[in-house]
Image 1 (cartoon, rainbow, N blue to C red):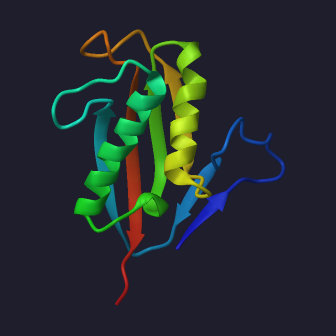
Image 2 (image 1 turned 60 degrees about the horizontal axis):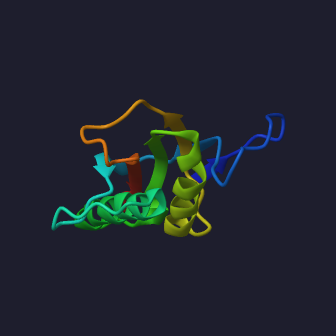
Length: 131
């Protein structure tokens, strides 16, 4: 079972995430490569929120291939190209995770492989191994 770590002697998180996540052994791990907001046909939406939703949808497909779900995610690294993209990204993130709050980092970067991308998401997940 995963346990959120948000000590009371630290400032509260800026948004819906945990300061840390504990994963009890033994566990299986999945590391998703950075996912961009593009569907299987190559379509890239104009809005950051729609791109972020696709990033999470694509990561969800990777998790499903390993028999995992969003509740197994322990860390999210996300990158946006402008501060204006932070809120739309966070709205998509919060919709994907519902009440689950993994550890999370959000950074502003100068760009991605193609100029139409505004967000990229990496996910790390862990699942308890039962005997």
